[in-house]
Image (cartoon, rainbow, N blue to C red; front, side):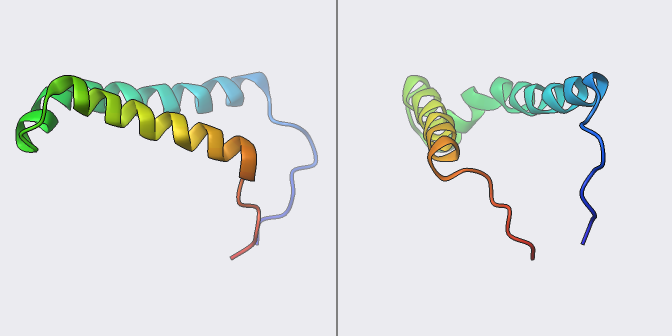
Length: 71
């Protein structure tokens, strides 16, 4: 188990972590057209499905909070 940090993370660390989440979104967005083609679905429906998934994940994260149990 990793011990708790004695100091809060620096601004540089927070910026880098935020950038990673943006990078992951920008990696799959260009492939939405191919995803719609592979599932033989409308592009708008595919885009809406992914947006709905991300929105629901955000809402559930606010309601349930992060998983802080040790494994």
